[in-house]
Image (cartoon, rainbow, N blue to C red; front, side, top):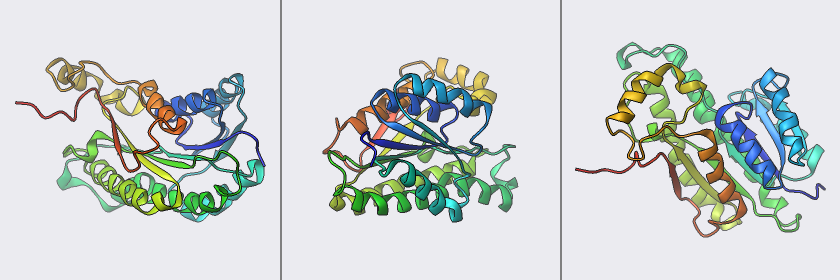
Length: 259
């Protein structure tokens, strides 16, 4: 049995997932980092950064949409560490080509929901089953599951319909998991980022720069992956242990309605 707590982060190789991996390593967690390719340049460069913080790093190649492989992946993590304390469901994709709502096709829709919704839901189900019995076997275990959604869970974007639907549904999934698992001693939270400067938002940078200037974000700046990672670190520390099911906005105030 690993003496240190263990965190699984999906979509760990870049952007928000990379920042979360570093933040939890700094909090004393060993890191099981899941990305589509375990030996990509991004994953290879992440490993020494995590290890410099004194954490063990276990790279796992998995497309989370392939739910038939979840059992094998979770078994390999348990075989290595003997425990799972935190799951951060962060993996997510956007359309390769942004199309109007009236032009989307079923293949693109299914692909995005597979990664953004179906994969996280069944990963959470699989990990929760392990956490239920592990929490009684592991000393000082504070199991938690965190779903990373998006401001698109409540914001219409007609050229990103698939993402809006997937994130809105994932937000409800987080709430239902929180309801079910609270009695098991497993806290579930939702982190809801706003406009975060990552590779996924690069192609819309000029548009959103203008909108930020015009007041889209009250705090008048882009968010960073570190902003999200700090929120995750606070949750796993137990700072919000009596707040199961809470949505934590990391959006600079985009959620504020004002007149």
